[in-house]
Amino acid sequence: MPTPSEHLAASLERLKALQRQGRVAVRARDLPRVHRERLSRNGFLHEVMKGWYIPARPGDAPGETTAWYSAFWPFAAQYLESRFEDAWCLSADQSLLLHVGDRTVPPQLLVRSPKGANKPTPLPHGTSVFDVRLELPAEQDRVTIEGVRMMTLAAALEADRSAGVALVDPEPAALAQVPVSYTHLRAHETVLDLVCRLLLE
Image 1: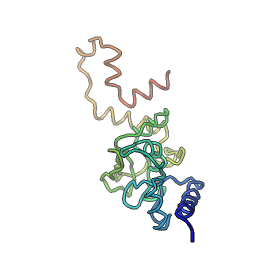
Image 2: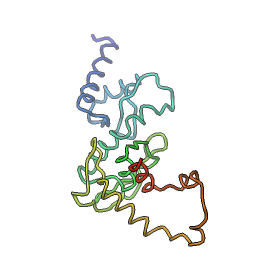
Image 3: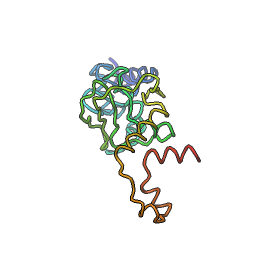
């Protein structure tokens, strides 16, 4: 009869097979229940939400965020792909940030899809995905980078600029003449300002 260590080794081999396929978002149906429970019990698998898991390292302290933040982008891409297939993309703001190399995990990832539910999906450590029911940009205005579907840089810049024009009131002429510090400008920097600054640096 196999020992507990041999049982665990068999479960780990099933998990490694998924990882070799590039899987970060592990669905319940990807692993038999006995393997899921054994891997979870031994700290090799963490539940993200009902029916979804990510690989983890045993010994992580309760509340440890490293595994989640490391897995966030591939998990989000694979989770959204399973829900919407290819009918989704990131918002203009989030697309811009990724185009300039800012892969900071956002508190709420805004996604647009014709199949969106207009509600958030809670994720670990105070993060979430909010899928908005919106039509996608034209195909030529979308691109996929490392599995993440987003707007092209040009399309995202135009969308963000248009939104800014529509939502921001012109500054009074008197205020426009008041000098402000660089620190003040950075504190009020928009995503569009950030992208332009990084492209120019």
